[in-house]
Length: 134
Length: 141
Image (cartoon, rainbow over the protein chains, first blue to last red):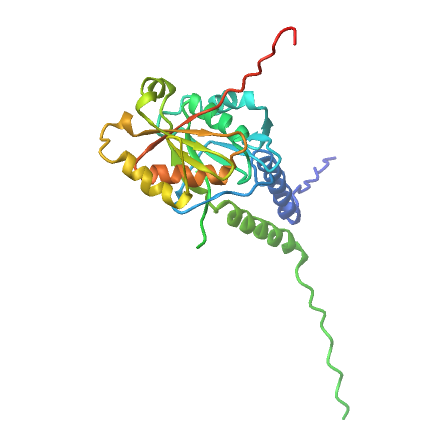
């Protein structure tokens, strides 16, 4: 006697596709947030003339508690130069833009060593500021 | 003749689409958030070798908590621009246009930004010189 093989269909449930995509997206958003500095507390200083900064690989931030961050990761003052240098790598001159975000009340004692560290490794500093309101 | 009551129809939104709606909403807000570019002012600081060679001839600006001094003279912030332009007038060589900015430890960043912006708009090249604090311990009191 011949036994017929049963053929069963195994479809991926299309109902769950949206949820899978949603969860994947949340995963990548959290991953990306770990590298940015949008969660840090700082207020920019104001200037009369400001321009669009363009794209930058590196952002150095000094928050309202005078803590240093390189691309959202907290570092010590002495580590800034090495961190920035590693992130810039072999980027040619002119494209070595480093965004410098400093809390408006931060004191020279804290921001000057950071400026020195960035220029020491050949970074082109762009002070992130807001337009002065008359 | 009695008319039949109309049938009530239950209209439910298709629940299979809620995931897609949420996904599209998230993408929308994500794009909105990432489109805001940073804006500011670029600053190129000259290398330290140049500043040490030409130090004696350069203009020196000293910053305090809310004070500004140009070559040792205290100025009001509104007068600083004009005085600096006068000091830079006639200096054509790039190395002569270097302005050394010395800040006291408590100088706030907003004050530093305003003054360095004035220097750059006057045609000066900003370079910073940090104060090295030294503690002298006298042996034997």
